[in-house]
Figure: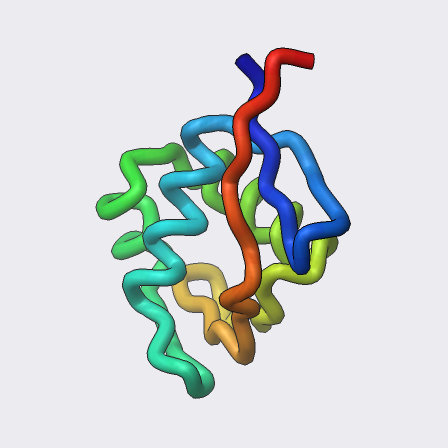
Length: 92
């Protein structure tokens, strides 16, 4: 079974369990305004490696789900995050 992240009911990318955990972690920390988060907190809560977290942060940014800026090596600031997304499963 293949998992997809769908935004606005139109665009989709394939996502795995690690990507879902990173997305859920960002949703947990984000407060509807610019939110500074320690990278270590994302790694700890999502259970992903630093490389995995960075991959999914940049993938989600490229896909347009989040906007963030890196504030040094250990912090990021989430500037915005869309709420109109869903995870769908397919047998394609």
